[in-house]
Image (cartoon, rainbow, N blue to C red):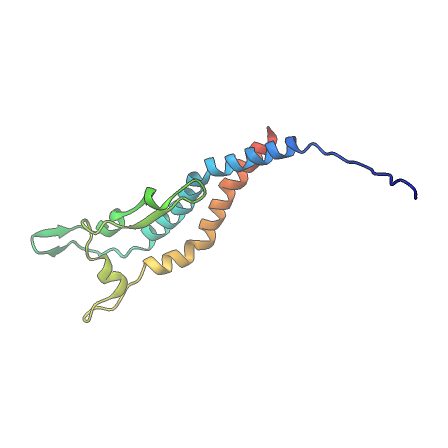
Length: 146
């Protein structure tokens, strides 16, 4: 019986692993920045689509000037729903500044809906995804250049 020849091979992947770790760190570092870029696209679209009356209107003692709803649209980071790999932003209108936004979005029994939230989301979604991808692509490319 003959002895068996064994060929051993050893590969040092520490350089690759270190680079992958840096890419992961770069992605985590830029998660919030990327999410904010996407939220900004939604924010801008909703502001542009928010209905605006031609004249001021009143509710009780409060007078709402034209553009109140547009000015009430905001974006906010939601820390409780975010982590290293996910950043959550809310884009909506401040209900205490323009409570009537829901009546415009959904309508009432006496007023037809003038939706802007959902159509704005649908229209902006592809651009928001592109904005998120662009921020992450730039971060990864920058890290790869190091």
